[in-house]
Image 1 (cartoon, one colour):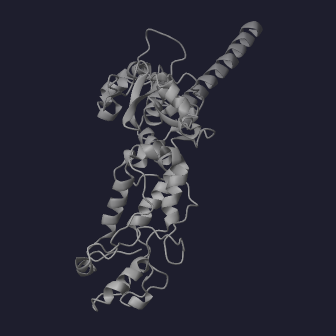
Image 2: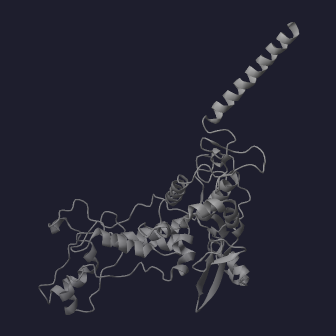
Image 3: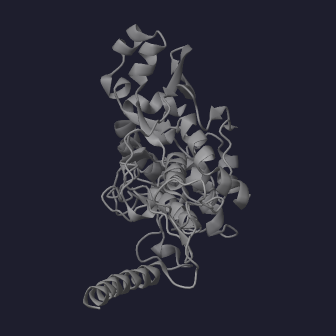
Length: 426
């Protein structure tokens, strides 16, 4: 693609990211998102002609200013310095790129705030024809999109890629090594730039989910293995529920009917009102409180902010651990001269279907410590763990002690038999 003098690739990347950084895009159909991405990127990253030789205008693109060639020829009759055409080292987008947005986004264009103008004109000369336009201010500008739609002279980007939806199946739902195995079956997927401002929006499927999984696995590797089973269950629910939100189905039609705009919803096309997208269902406050109670001693001993639960936390007006349904998004939909204000609510996630069957949940005690097999007031528990001090001296492992005790029992029985024999035969 064409990189103008003084313009860096980082600048173009930032420009594209800012143009795509619209929180409303993520709730659009994925085909609509792809068409928007193509339109925005093909206008920012201007494709170079095939076999271009930098510095040789004969290999440049002459097609753009053919749009106004007749006007330039007429003007040249009075001003000999006027060029008939203008070689440019790039191709403009094909009009199909813009038309694809009109087709794929159709009912949702009103949400975008503006409808793309596929007949828009722009000055692609970047000021090179400023003298010509000063001679005739009414001189037309070429079309922003090539109306001939010839991919040999205009840019029609490949659309054979996918972008993430707002809901995905958990990729480790059947893999016991997955951090949230048994807890998460499917999850809400946030836009990539919500994870990090350095990431471009509209990532391919499963990219963001893999990032979340990696973060959870990294955090899990730092957890001590000696935590009690109750604490391990609570901390898994807390971490999975807080990072992999349950998806809550939403639609504009339902929001309209709940807001008292049912008759209006019936007048709009089903492709708009019945389109399903997803929003995050945050873990219920009981999940946070269970973790705070079951792991209280460990949390206090760790004294680390990432491990310290704040069960009444509120971020941007949204409760991290709600007690009831909460509004996550308010959106004004223009309807002619007026607008309709819609509220989108999600319920808390109780995580009631979670199962805990992997080896992760088993407490693993260091040598010299054991998991008590019965309640006993004499048990000396290790604070913040599921382990207690062994009744046996820590000079052997548990297996060695078992073997030693077994040998003692066997020797005792042999000795008893021999003593009995001597007493009887004395």
